[in-house]
Amino acid sequence: YGGGRSFAILPNPGFHVDSLIADGVSQAPAESFSFSNVTGNHTIRVTFAPNQLTITFHSVPDSLLYVVDGVTYRGTKTFTWSAAAAHTISTDSTQPSSVSRRFRWNHWSDAGTLTHTIAPLTDSTLTVSFTVQFFVTMIANAGGSVTPGSSWQDSAGTVSINATPSAAFHFASWSISGLGQTSQNPFSLVVNQPATCTANFLRNPVSVTVQTNPDGRSYSVDGGPIATQRQ
Image (cartoon, rainbow, N blue to C red; front, side, top):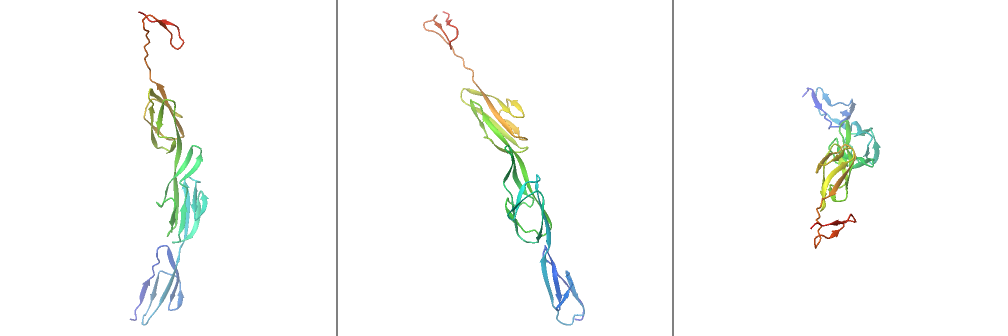
């Protein structure tokens, strides 16, 4: 009684003291207030308001598309938002670059899903990251089959390609664009560009013995010279 008393005013994260009224008199907004010589009742009335935040978006690689609150943007974009206000952000799972090159969504920097809601409390930068993919075309020439089928593969990734010969054939080589030929099968392909992988097969050699009955008769094979079986 008769002494001074101080009161702390603590805004929630993302908010600030907007107004402060003590005993019906407006005071400068502050996060504390003191009464001196307290000999009776006093009142403190405080209102809070959200901070205005700077929220920046960009993509890696640069200039890819993302969507904020239903509007599509490209490159770096900065917004001024009220703290704790909800906003929806998203992007496409893939974005084309060319016939054989595209970008696959990898992650948002806040670890959110492809489409999700954010309500920032502080100034923030959100980055949407993509992985480059190249198309690998798989071809089997006559005499066999290949796995896997033609597909998109992550840049710098490795895919195992395998050739399986049909009956009466054997594997000869892989012809791979940008790399040349290899007889290794399966082959581990490092994907750093679009690639066409062609499996080549050869017929197995076959031995055929021709004889006549009775011995000593003449014969011809595929229209070739006439031969006589020796007795």
